[in-house]
Length: 437
Image (cartoon, rainbow, N blue to C red):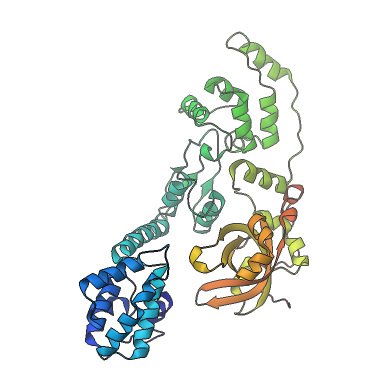
């Protein structure tokens, strides 16, 4: 039902109404029965069903877990329609569409309710992407997409994202000014993204901070009265860098120097000791290690994407970027690699698995047929980073990569922490290429 409706809405298929009565029932959906109420009306108007029979048909369509119950109405419907002058082929096609309701069907009121939510969310995301992002981050866990993907999408739509900061963040993500000319605010990531940090400790830090920012790790520790473990969680999340200028290792070093000493007896001695101790020069972490630690401690990074550190290896394997794949011609044979964002195996898809991969350029949707899934089941279900060889399928703006082979690249992903960012020479993210299979 869906595809004929979409083709007609796009002007690619002509609307057909054999009789004025049928046009009256199906006009709003371009001649395609989409809602349960329409099916009942078709049965009554075109096949002579009584109200009681039409209600039985509706009940059969609503029995999601007991498919096949619509089939017992086949003879009654087709004979009733042909007796009233409808072509048998048309009556058969109408029944085939109704059979789809055996596993999936909506009353119009339900469809409208979902549509309102989808439209409202889409409008909010389009008109206020900063507010939309902050609300989604504060509602986690939810939905298909993790905070990393939500943040990346918001940045691609012009939203400034500011990192977790001991001198600026609250527990939830918040909006920060000033408002830009385009009406957008920056989104400050909240401390709730820091793994291991308790809400109570974050509340103590925010309350102690007030209008006077912390001057040092020691200042935060003494004013907030939180344990060193809480500060370690924040340091691991790089939350001391934005407000105090301390990198991860520097912040962790400063935390190790703290002692659980009561005030005021040892306060002066501690300050004197800090003044006497020489500065220690710590070796900076590799770029890849910073990214890996970001993901480990907050589930996202505002630095480079992990696959940017692996691009030279992927080029050697003949793999193109997701952006190159999206811009390639239809039916191109391609090999791409990416982090697994989403795995879906809907019950109505007859064993087909839908997966979304992401690299530093874009995300691409992958289709895995049942035989391919059984062949690569372990990799599909457990791999964090996958390489997929397949054929591109494009229909309008919808692009899929139909799988032919899958390889687990999770071990390569694990090496990101040992790397520094090096862009391969002559690397062009926008140039698509094709490989032979």
